[in-house]
Length: 217
Image 1: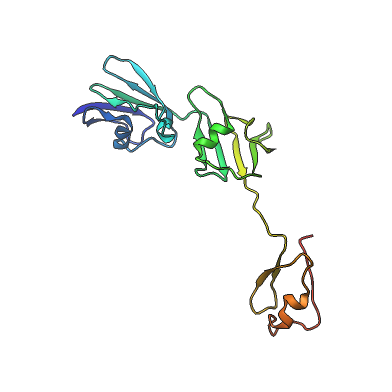
Image 2: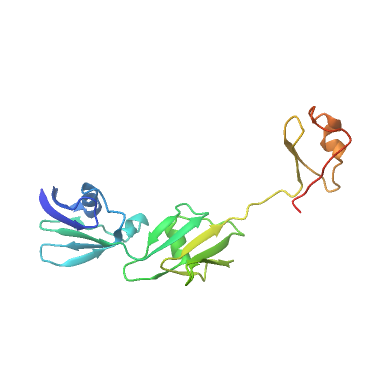
C-alpha cells in the first residue's frame, strides 16, 4: 500500500492508503467521488518529483481510445479543482444534462456537445434551439435548422426538438360514445353516419339528430 493525499473538491478530502498503480478514478471513488462543484476536466496529479499533470476524466466518459488513465504511485497527490465553464443540452438526446467545457475554453461546437450527450442519431427534420440569458436576465431563444455551424458559449443551452410525424387522415371520436376511438379516412372522406356506425357507438347520453363538429382550426 502507498499513501495518497486527496484534496480539493471531493466529498471526503483525506490521505488514504491504496495499492500501488491504482487508477486515478478508483482513488477518487475511495474518497466519496467528486463534489457537485468539483471539476472532472481539471484534476491536478502531482508525483513524487513534484511534477504536475492535468487530467481530463471526460475522456473516460467519451471512451477515448487514446486516453491512458494515470496510475497512482508513491507520494502522489491528487487535487480536484473547482468546476469550470459549463453548457447544457436537452431534448432528443441520449444523455441530457450539464457538461463542463475543457479547461481554459469558453466555447464548444454543437457537434461536440451532441457527441458528449450520446446523441448518435438525430432524426431528419429536427430543429436546434440555443437558449441564453440577455442583459436583463430574460431567456433569449434562437432556432437553427442545422447543427453544423452552431457554437455555444459558457452558460448557454442547446435544445434539440424532434418533429413527430402525424397521420392527417386520422379521425378521433370522443364524448358521448361508448368508448373513444379513432379511424383513418379515405381520400374521399367518410360520412358521419359511417364514422358513428349508424349510431351504434353512441351511449345513452348522446343527443339524437344533433352533432357538434370541431377542428384544431
